[in-house]
Length: 253
Figure (tube, rainbow, N blue to C red):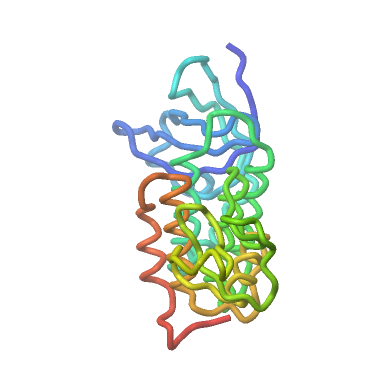
């Protein structure tokens, strides 16, 4: 069988036996791909570093149809992303993004999702310390949108009326977006003003708002949205990220 090659990001690794590991990649051409990497445990130096979580490179594997686990031939790393380990928020944000993909991504090509993943991890690694919480939030939102889910923030989910820049509405979690003031009279979730709505729009667009505040509330919103519309269960990494976020009095951005 001829091996196949594809750009890939290593999302998670598990030890197997005495010398091997099971590696779970998100690939540009084949979506989620799990491979057995034989004889890689016990390596030291560069070989071990290149198989660290969130590394990007060219994966070459023997892929057999109708199988869930394949055999790795080689992984030519081009970026280790060691910087994601500099602090707990970077690491937690990257872990949450990886968990989201492992929970919902498909075993088929999705170039936009792959490119979005790489861009989100690159931003999270490179951004200055003040911007890290916002980059973690944005990474979750942009991957969610690339998966085909996004909150409706510019028009009412009930009546379709456009929301102007001054209206206070409510975020209807079940409906996946904002209710206008008229449709929010009988409830519909937590209140959300124009500033918070604009900040979420920026985060979904891959940008970190300069004046981003209420970090934990923003994280609670994306976590609840994911649980209801994407994963069907809480992401374990979200709790880790929330604990690592600055306290309200220490808010950054």
